[in-house]
Image (cartoon, rainbow, N blue to C red; front, side, top):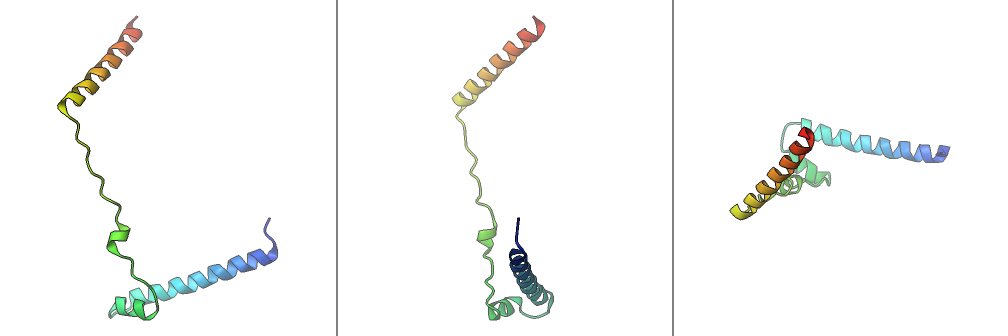
Length: 86
């Protein structure tokens, strides 16, 4: 259980963050050059590359591998169907 001092510390940290976010929101809502204002307040701009997830490469299967996988799946289906019927 948190003591009263811990609660006060947490609340002061939350208040500081709310104040910071309010300043950022005011900067973004204002007209003019947002980047210059952010830089003046020591707020770093997030790079676009950092926000995007790394592109996933599609893996390519050989025709032989596709055939092996398809044959194995057909075999599983056949076993399941024979158990259901019999």
